[in-house]
Image (tube, rainbow over all chains, first blue to last red; front, side, top):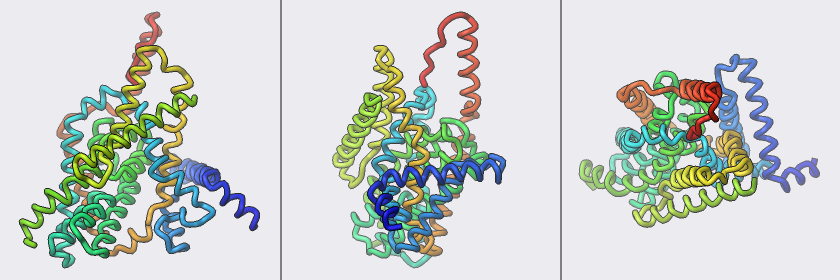
Length: 254
Length: 147
């Protein structure tokens, strides 16, 4: 047993490849046998991944899900920002330039709405739960944009640590819900073409949520969604601690 | 093959660098559009190589390999989220998260409807394969589709 642990830990990234490969293999079987292929294998794999992350978090008390187990630390490298961005950029080769151009302006509109709408919802919910000061409302509102915008904004305008934690949790929850919910509503919201994928990427933000949700819906849409989603966090970090904070402060005072 | 991987890495690194620079320029503590810039660079590089006839099998395979690994990487990403914190956040997290989500989903639906019905991914692929077949039938080489 000790020997196995040693080998797996020493080859962390290879262990991750093997584990993820097995998860995907099982998911494809489940998809074909249990749902007759109606639910994508990748959607099931992502759900299994989230469930394993929940279990890992409970088992270790850490914040990085399965990657907190020493044997599975390679999951952290494989699913980390570096390889994620690398693989997303690689999907650009599947982008149809003409299709992307057609969606240009509408993508920008989606980006703006995708920052403002969640911010308003987050700030209002925060206020209704008693966080009525401008700093807390802005921080939790920013968290509803993405889980990176939340803490960046909170740190910039001096929010308290519990409020920042709440804003991160809101953003993570939203990202998780995007991954899980997108395949379910894809038909309803017309998510079957490059343009709506770009609108979707701009509106939902969080590269992780968008790429996971689109991957579970239709692999071919991923590059289009990622193309706009990548600007989402930057835009949020730009406007939330500045313009949006000033607006909230002007409305609620102090 | 390494040429493709290297090209991909160079585009990604330059994209990240420009994204960081844009962040500093705008006074933001974040990478502004690094991945998007990298994607645009890669698309441009591919078009440039294609016009000079240097976009060969090896380059394409090196990039394609990482594109194909994309979904497993997303699964690994899902497996390292702080799901416990998201669940423990309680009602405020739940309501703000779901509220923002529903509003954004409806906005996607509205914007998509407003701007008419575009070709779906299936229709685009069907048309492209039809065009390719017709071109072959006409005896001319297949048109270079921007794929």
